[in-house]
Image 1 (spheres, one colour):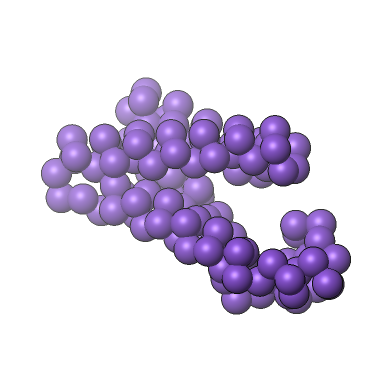
Image 2: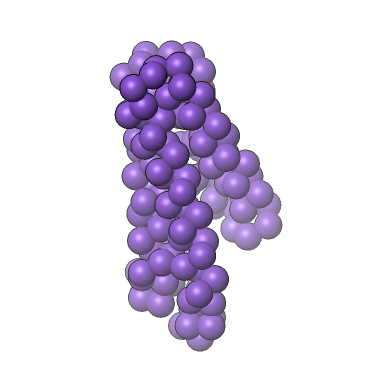
Length: 120
């Protein structure tokens, strides 16, 4: 179960690295505008806000990777629970305030990973 929980945690971490890239570096591109459902003018006007959001997604990813590689398994376990919980709370908040699909795209993987970690 440990391997499965690490795989799911890794998926969530990689997803947040991808979101970091979209928000920090690709925000005004057609790809990012499609992913986030934004218009060109809005993307240009909110570029610095999106970069800030991207940075926070990077911190979530870094925390998850830290949990995966921490030499003390007990500390790694706690780190994964904390950061997956943060992702889940952010997804729930975003799903209800910004875009419902966040619940599925970010919340579901975080929930599955959190369950797998708790069961490992």
